[in-house]
View 1: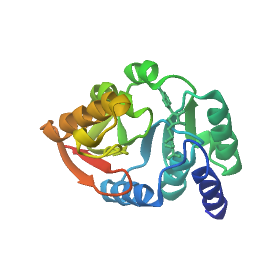
View 2: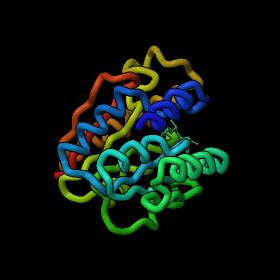
View 3: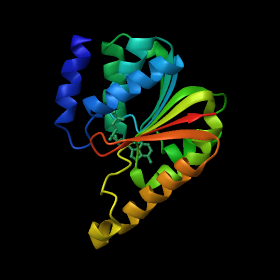
View 4: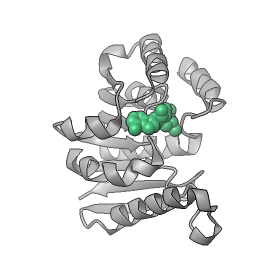
Length: 190
Ligand SMILES: C[S@@+](CC[C@H](N)C(=O)[O-])C[C@H]1O[C@@H](n2cnc3c(N)ncnc32)[C@H](O)[C@@H]1O
């Protein structure tokens, strides 16, 4: 866990950092509550959140990351942390991977391109077991007030707003939003 802590601190200084301590705490609390051991991470970066979940709860993870350099660092991190066998790392666009995934997951961590959350939602719903959790990071990135969003970011803000509405309005989910960092949504599939 010391190695993971050091890797997280280094990654937080990068361009696309690992999730915040607050988001990780929500993930850990949610995973513990639902007894999760089978994880899917969309936008895995250097693999540190999948690693944290597998190291804490055991089980397996599928980690999707489309940037080859980051995926290679994720592979090195999984190797260094002794969990390479427990993680299936897929270096590809999540939009191409998700439709062909089968089976179900206990917890899906959605942390890839924010503009794609809405598009990924039907596959996330399909791939979650009943009682499983969809945890989406940065759902209030750009805030809640559309009038305050700069013109060139409006499309992204609208996509995120539509994702929040889709999740909150879906009767197959019981959803809570957390004011943590740029916002975290946790939807438990009924
Ligand atoms: C915020 S970072 C992920 C941090 C990681 N979830 C963590 O907690 O350590 C977002 C990642 O999503 C990846 N990403 C962006 N678009 C993607 C796509 N279409 N398919 C897969 N990964 C994508 C980026 O390359 C980046 O590494």
